Length: 69
Image (tube, rainbow, N blue to C red; front, side, top):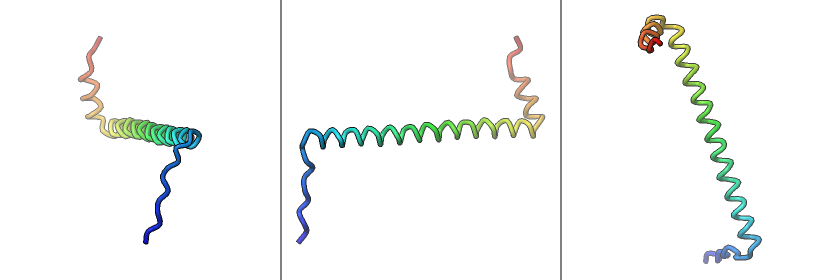
């Protein structure tokens, strides 16, 4: 026989604690996700600068495509 599972308590403080815990976990996940996206963006910029630095023809083509004021 399987043991019976206890239902989640419906006491006010238990529900408030679960809600606060859920909010903290969601905040932590999204803050880490935002940090990872920022680091990926910086890595992409660094890689693009490296490619342009090592390929002068591509850099010149890029500079020629910019509008001249």
